[in-house]
Structure formats: C-alpha cells, structure tokens
Length: 56
Image (cartoon, rainbow, N blue to C red):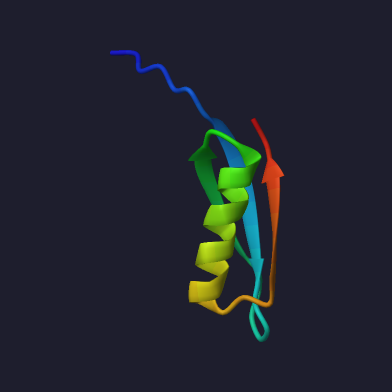
C-alpha cells in the first residue's frame, strides 16, 4: 500500500549547555510550524539554542 505524504522534512538540532547536540527529524507542512515545534521542544529540553533546516 502506498501512502501519499503532503509534508516536508525538517531537521532540528537542539544545543544543550553541558552535552552534545540532539537531532530530530520531523514531518511538517511549513517552516513556521517546524520552528514552533522546535521552540516548544527546546523549552522542555532546556536547550540553550536550536536550528531548523528544511531537508526535503
């Protein structure tokens, strides 16, 4: 069975204060939604910074 996906892939990297960066790949419809998801997760992880890159 083939499923049609109407989304893009975004790579999110979370930078932590005292550890190596964490990376997450998410499916999203827009860059703005990916940034919102990254912001919410960064607050939960207590990350000092994050970056979002659209990869597909």
